Amino acid sequence: MNREDLYYHIKHKKSFLCIGLDTDIAKIPMHLLDLHDPVYEFNKEIIKATHDLCVAYKPNIAFYEARGSESWLSLEKTMNEIPPGIFKIADAKRGDIGNTTQMYARAFFDQMDFDSITVSPYMGEDSVKPYLDYKNRWVIILAVTSNLSAFDFQFLPVGGTDQKVFEKVISVSQKWGTTDNIMYVVGATKANMLEKIREMIPDHFLLVPGVGAQGGNLEEVAKYGFNDHCGLLVNSSRNIIYASNGTDFAEAAREEAKKMQKEMKMLLERAELV
Image 1: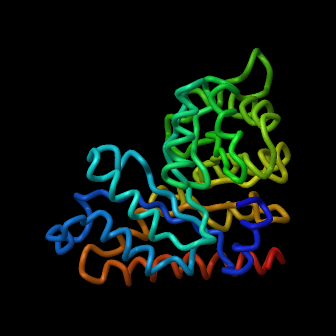
Image 2: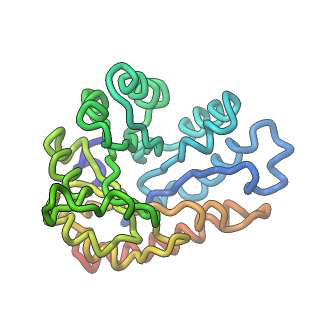
């Protein structure tokens, strides 16, 4: 899926919603625990209830790795439930080099058929390039994250200048690929950074976590983050998938997703992007 394809689906659905499948077996409804594969059954119902309202799903890989081979099978089956035309993000935050990165690329792109993977750029171009060798696949580079400890490194000045580490990451890494295969993570809790980031990378898509449970403001994100292709994928996880822990969990998830989609539709129309 390239940038034009992604924008087509945003316009068609009037949504730039990404739903995070951070599925914790300790939090899913109790009645599912009697089933053979409760994580998959939960994900399947969430996808059935919300796929027409979002343009992307983002499984957080740690929630599947933590339970071993059984949960990897849950993830594989979940991927098969995602309809065509929906962008699939492996939220893996990998950050290695050489043959190791090639194996990660093979695992997530060839075996699991993800469209994209989140990566840490700390080890430089070697940690990103193998992913970019895949046609119509994306690398989503961590730039500004939504956690409080982001200030430990990301906002430090570089070499006695006014440039911050995250700005250096963006300015260097955008040269490794194109607007059709590189996105950036910019946390919604750092929405005041979006205006400056848009000056640096006006045409790239941004994956924006932190709206909802972490306190990010969707309208502010849109105000500073929109470009002429929308340019945003805004993720919500807990607010949607854990909207209810009863037998109505899928219906409740749909209601929460619908609320976000309606607000997104209004913001897109106001910006004349649909």
